[in-house]
Image (cartoon, rainbow, N blue to C red; front, side, top):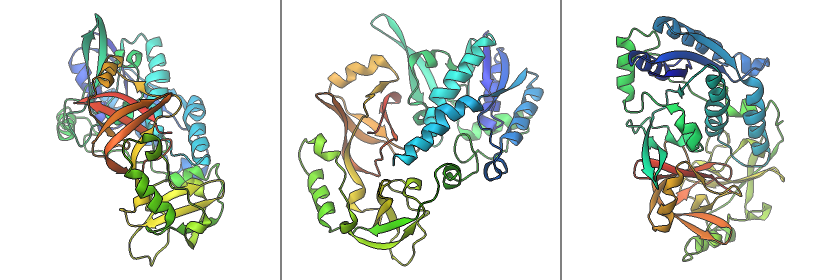
Length: 394
């Protein structure tokens, strides 16, 4: 049997993961990660880490396994929090949960686990892992969780082979209901605890409240752009061009002349493409959606209805880092002309897509136009049930 360090979060998923590993006879150690350390009342009063760490410790006591609290807050601020502020300030939309897994849980946490003599680290993610042999070499595959409503493979889309080689996902083959049943049968006090909400490290705190800790409010104009403006009509025309990914990824170029001012906002850096809530402008009939943000000019461009053409994209371009291969053995699929499935947000329905390379640029083409493709987010690409690669959207 192996020594496994489990990331005990204080929730039911990681608790059952630890219980299953203990039942299988492994040498299990529980480790709680404290990723946020801020004394400001806005955050500290709402952050549930104290209650979560207490729950994690109680589970470790119930399972009779060693338990430690690992403070990663300093590194977390450098790797995740500062990155978030910089991305929002630049008008991009980061996904801290994806970075949390790549930089913290399966990097810093893994390093600390190895110092404790661990053979593996385990988490309560709803994903699975298996191995294949290609060209005489073993590769690890990241597979979707069996519970399609809880599948969390998207959040692990930036992991690499070394990280996967040390990872265990004990509950990936289970349904959420089965996990709760196991927790109750095992007598774990967290069996009915609600799932955590909010960002991966600040819990119940709203994103605008968090961003205001560093990105100060700046009042600016909200401009309504109608569907029949020249910029929108040109965008629709470009979406109909044949086999032109360079054109498809271009966004409409709005200016103050593109529409009329209908209200004020508190800072363009607080908003993202496709956002509906938080505009606080009524009397428009159809709901308003953010079409574009201009952080330099501090302007938000909005449109009426979720079917506004300016929200649609037919392709995206990977940033300068390019495609990240979770499973390098799948690269040959690109040459085979296969179609893939993709998503750009957690729990988004998978859409059909394929890749096209032109010179030094890498594009992912959608067979059906997608809404709210946003710079800074992650594209995750699947072949059958396997997440094979990902990319940051340029």
